[in-house]
Length: 132
Image (cartoon, rainbow, N blue to C red; front, side):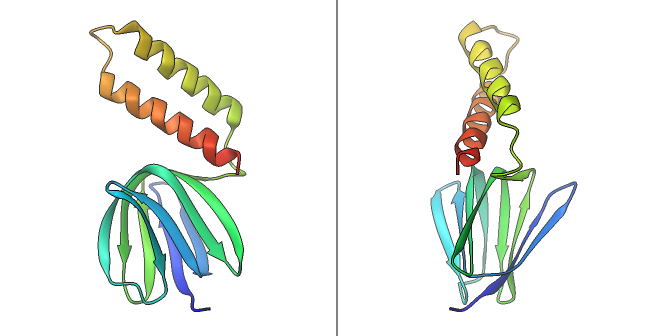
């Protein structure tokens, strides 16, 4: 099976996954998959799960959104944050979820509803990926 280079860049680290067979990401218009010889492009990513297949083994990561650039040579994700399913602190994610739920229920004018929704979705995503 053909492979391509895959790396993830955040403000604090670069994850070089090396040669991979397949990547599935959450785009703002829905999920999409990439295999070797994919058309080039730049795609906006939403908060969601990244699935990476390397030699038949699947790996799952949680991301906070960003962009991906696909070229002939590689696929590169430029994201705010990324965590492998084994890196996620589930207790911290549960506390984040509880805080977001409390803020959502308050309906206070000083609380930004859009930020609360994003916090809620990010915590739920992290918990879902952690179960992988």
